[in-house]
Structures are given as structure tokens and as C-alpha cells.
Image 1 (cartoon, rainbow, N blue to C red):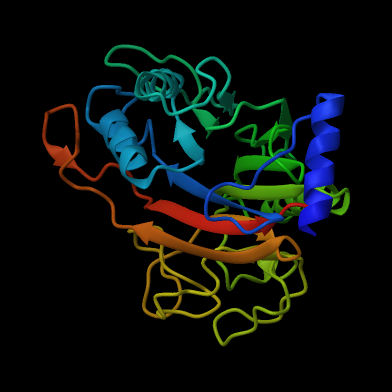
Image 2: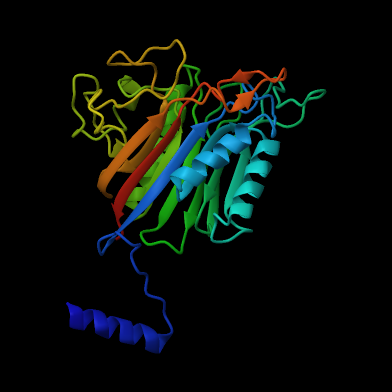
Length: 317
């Protein structure tokens, strides 16, 4: 095997090709990535502010968690630009001019991010990639008659395995939710069947035990709080290393909606195909209450959703 590797490297040198090397800590034929997701309630809780502490809270968490990919939901355009600038100043991306994507979700009722005196632009979803994207997918999901919900993805040709990183924010409207979930799942399955590796994060407005996700979770996830599954994916907290709720995971909200195992709702999910996964883990972090302020300068919870971060090792076909 060593002789074959030497021959491959020598041939690559002659032909002027680049041979990808696995990241430090990865076994040959695998790669490890870190994902960070947050529904920031950029307008609802933070009134489109870039100075009330939300942007600083995001950048501070990114500094500490040091992810490779970032997913944001309900982020206002001004906040997106402030985060982009902060990540550039930190030298976080490999390419300072090609690492971020934003997709607005226009509202039929013209529900927009607001400044102190006026409405501005619709909030949306955003992705940030440490690695320069080589392509972008902006897919509009079946209409819920309200917001133009999207699946936003970046593909990274420089990474092995045809990697895509996606974010989405599924509707809460029960009549249309199944169609949006099916549209996203079908697209992820197609990319996976074509040989790609896809990581998808977002607010799915659907909990792990909901029958709507049975076609997502792999049958190997079969517990009292999440059974009947027939799909191809793992949600990266379904092994629940904290032991709180096997197959279900840890709450990601702090509202009144209940989940399982005496927890509140879990709707913020990170997915990858079971066929690509070598190992994975995920954690949700309580919402900061001493970082963000309202218009009166009083401290408020930064969002009604928790930050979710995950680490996964995938095969690189």
C-alpha cells in the first residue's frame, strides 16, 4: 500500500495534479467537520439590531466553537452583513471574498426586518463556509401562502466526496409542512445517490418523534421516543451522548411547546446520510440571557432557540 501511494504521488507530480490530504485527526478516506446552527430570531427578538449584542454573541460563540460551517435562520440582511464582516476580520474563512450566502424569505404580508423608524428587507437564511464554495443552490420550497421558504446550499469542490452544506427553515403550517419536508428530503437523497455528501441544518418546525420525520430517520433509530423510521439519515443528536433521550436528543427551544423526556421542543436539527457517517455527536446550548438587549437597554434572551453545534466524521468516496 505504501508503494502504491508513492507511485500515485509521483504520477500526480508529473501530471501537475493536486492530491487531497485528510485533515489532521482524520483517518484515510474520511474527513471531520464541525457545524454550528442558530435560529437567531433576528427581527422578533432582536429588532434587526447589529449593536444590541446579538452579532457579538454569534461571533463570540463561533470563536469558541470554531466550526467549519455556520447555518443561520431568521437573520436580517443588516445582521448578515455585520456577521460577514466580523468573520472576515477574524480571518475565519479561507477566502475572505467567497464564503457567505444569504437567501431572503419574502413575506406576502410584507413582514420585514425593522429599524427604529422603518421597515427594511425580509429576513432569511444564511450559510457561512470556512472553505470557498464552488457553487450555490437556492431552491424555493412549496408555498405555504406566507413566506417564500428556501433550501440554501453551497457545494465545495475543493473538499473530497462532493460535499454540500445546506440550511433551511421549514414552515410551521401543518397543511404545507409535509410537502416542504418531502421536497428537502428528496433533494438530499438525490445528491446522496449521485455520490455526494450532504450536511443539512435548520429549524424544521418538526420534532423527532413526529411521524413526518419517519421517512427521514434511518430504521436503526428505533427507541421508545423515536420509532417507526424508514429513511436514510441520522439527525446528529439521535445517539444522545448525554443519555437524556435516546433516539430523540436534547431540546433546542425554551418556549412552552413540549417535546419528549420532560424536555421542551426540539426543532433545530442537523442531518447527514447514514451511509456516509463514521461517527457523529451534537449538543444544544442554553440561550444567553446576559448578552442581548431590547430597545430599552434591558437584557433579554438572545433568541427563543438554542445554539446547536455538531461534529461528524464522514467517508470521502
